[in-house]
Image 1 (cartoon, rainbow, N blue to C red):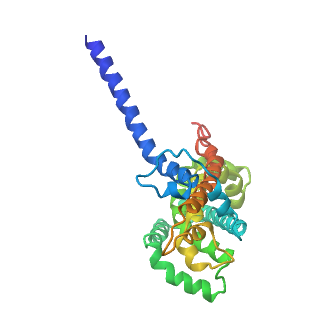
Image 2: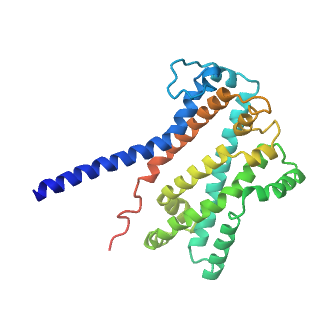
Image 3: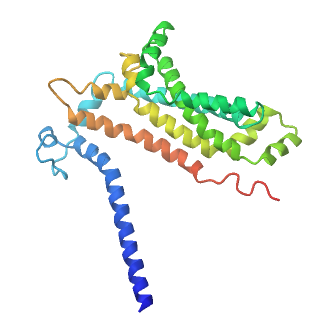
Length: 283
């Protein structure tokens, strides 16, 4: 009787666990489903009340209208170029800074002070830095350019990447670098050939967050660009007017913007599950 009661409790617990997971997944996935379904609806169905959860009439007109607009290819390439460039720059310079701050090249007080200063730069809301960024970018002649927006995203993403990667560098066994020194490797060779390959999981996480942040960023892009370097989030905002809301086109572009993030995340995911330092040092 005790065994059967235990089995019943375990069975009920399993059912409850699956129900909780199902509810959590539904809450997480439903916004994406709603955006994709709205992009496939006719205009009258998108504005229907009550909302149509499962549309029976589908159309690709919203995609044709959105991607058929003049300059859309340039805006897409702008988003991709700026996001990739800022991600590469952020991860590269953050890895150099994190490596220096995780080792004993500097005193402990200096390293902790610099880490605190780096963290302080991320404590301000982005809108408080918008006017100084705008003035600086205008003064140096980088307004409405790829380089201006790329440097802005790098400056904003690097503090998070530095703090994230410091932990990975600190957990790297010191014996690995000592072995590289015995083999005659200099500092740059140790960093490039030994340390970086072993900290790829940390770099992958930093790259994913940096790419998503740059790809979806709207505030700085709306203020620092006008036409030449305009990105997709700014284009989507143009579908909102005082007398209209083009839900279909906004949903179509929003659905398309998810694809590069998914592709990039899937590409970087393989580095997240590799225990590169497991068993590297024994004894």
